Amino acid sequence: MRILLLTAGSRGDVDPFVALAQRAAARGHEVRLGVTREFTEQVRAVGLDPAPLDGSFADLIARQGVSPWAAYRSFRTEILPMMAAVLRSAADAAVAYRPDVVVHHPKVLSAPLAAARLGVPHVLVEIVPTVTPTREFPAAGVTTVDLGRFNRLTYRASAAGSAMLRGPLREIRSSLGLPARGAVRGPASTLVPVSPALLARPADWPGTTVLTGPWPRDPVAEPDDPELDRFLAGGDVLYAGFGSMAVGDPAARGRAVVEAARAVGLRVLAATGWGGLELPAECSGDDVLVRRALPHDTVLPRCAVAVHHGGAGTVHAVVRAGVRSATVPFLADQPFWGGLLHRRRLGARPVPVRRLTGDRLRGALESLPPPEPVAAVAAAMAGEDGCAAALQVLERCR
Image (cartoon, helix red, strand yellow):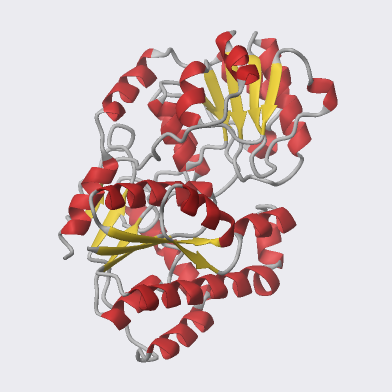
């Protein structure tokens, strides 16, 4: 079976697709993975066949950060041209590869058009619950307020992306020889790589929407880092990382993290990521270690607590490691996950990034729930095989 996977965004949008592609290839399927250029070599390095897509989200974030206001100001000059290039190149990749099924991220709005041109099914990957309506909770990233029966209305926000990219999508339709108007066939299935141990499947989801469990990447052999090993062996480590959240003052965030950790007797292991965290010189000391990136699967189980932005991938990695969270949500789906962790007694009440101070973070660390609830969920997650569940669905698309 020839499978084309298409994704776009930050590492949290790419890693699950890498994991699924690796498992599909291991089962004997022909696999190609479409990613933007900052991830092409990483995909090739793990033995996968990349389909390079035009554009770079890493470059975009480096230029303007992740502020919604910056995105609004630069939509026509920066975001729209890049997204148009991503969508065109994704459609071209599909036509060139001629797969049996197209598996795609919601951002890749041209994937259904390419599948229609080829006459093959497409499968949507709902990384976070934003597409399939339910009455049980509002769409992640729209509101954290439970609106009851009106929750379903919040899922209409996902249609805004299509509206903003109407022009490029019309051009892609034309280039593919499709009618200028009219709906194309919807997804054969929707895969949601979220742990049912963390978020129960809504009863009103259709049968075609499958909560598979997360798709964690296989551990990657990392270079020896004796300094990191010694630091972790000392115990009482607070992991801090905000991924791609390059907005505001990263040094102020670093200062707040170190102040709070020292106040409660923890040492700090900081991952600076794409610029979301910076440790100023006055925070240095034997109790602070800084790295640009860290392997979650090997580092987190050796930490006492994790301070993070609440991205879906990080949330799953932290809970899977049996570690309690103090989340600092920035935007999008992060308040959704931070609130879920708090309600499930897997973490402290979230501290929104705009209110982050050393004192507030110290209060969150002092109010962490006991470790037993997160240990129980981690044990349940250990028995999940999300990639296997997803492949069962894809193999029925033959």
